[in-house]
Image 1: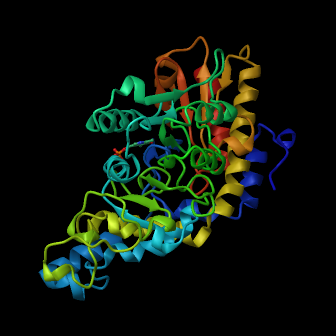
Image 2 (image 1 turned 180 degrees about the horizontal axis):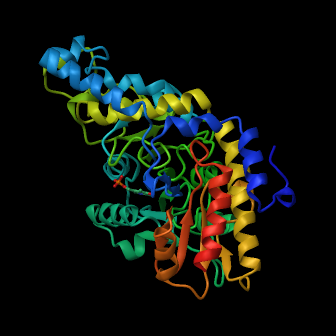
Length: 426
Ligand SMILES: *Cc1c(COP(=O)(O)O)cnc(C)c1O
């Protein structure tokens, strides 16, 4: 399915030949590429803010025009009526994360959804109050967990069990996560992990983690901010209880755009406690404006507010691209493209005293687009030199470079050029 690592070459001819053979090569022209000195910048931060599809502007303008033309009547008579607007995204979202339509909804923003879903799925009782999460989770997730625990009157120090890498290692061993679940099984309420760690790019085995959590009598939920649009997800088949993700990283839906949420079908008709709002209420009686909350079955029943139409228009435009391509093809290109980046980094490193250490797992199963690289002996100067030379990587103190070649718009030539600039900068 992917190219053997040995057959890569650090030449522009090779990179260009890979681009010619790339079945997704035309998709680059569907995005606005930021410019540097009149040339395309080398953009490797699609894991932070994905680029703008050229179709986004027209999608937002449609809603602006309908608002200008119709005012409040746009809720019913806009080209895409605003009343059921979130429903236009449902099928595509379900396909993206391997879910049934009843299991997904786009609403709010990511950290908001983490909290809303934890209200339902973190219900500590007596001795069953612990949460297992990964060490160095994204800070917003850490704060969400800590404040949820406190909200229920427990001590975060006791309630939150972090599983980290072993001494001298960078990534977390799968067996250590399973062992932690087993160890705390009598006190465990929830396992909540980032599906792909934002820092190392490590991909976790969500199916096995979910199975282990369930065996322990706990729920399993995932923050998929770095997974959605990056790796193949089968949330329904994996039996995941809940998940949420943002749309502005790999999903290219614009800064702060609307988040996605998943609640497994088996909870669709459940009486799970939730914080409710009118948009989660039964659609038939919503406008009777009566007392007594009756949730829409499925993920939609967790909505609070009416749809943020402009950010959903941007998200919908981006989802159309994902729908057209499909995650299988994206994944197939990722393996070749990130594999080439790995090859180039190793090649440059071999001429610089092996000072570049890729801390992202080398096995395909455990990674998506992103490679995180420690530049031993280098500091922020290296990052600055790259930035001044038309590269946009992501830098984390003290010396980690995160690079995410994105299969929709990055090319093999981008990676070859990056290798040249990296070697120069070093
Ligand atoms: C990007 C990211 C967030 C950001 O949260 P917002 O609510 O969208 O600002 C949260 N968690 C993870 C794991 C992320 O990668």
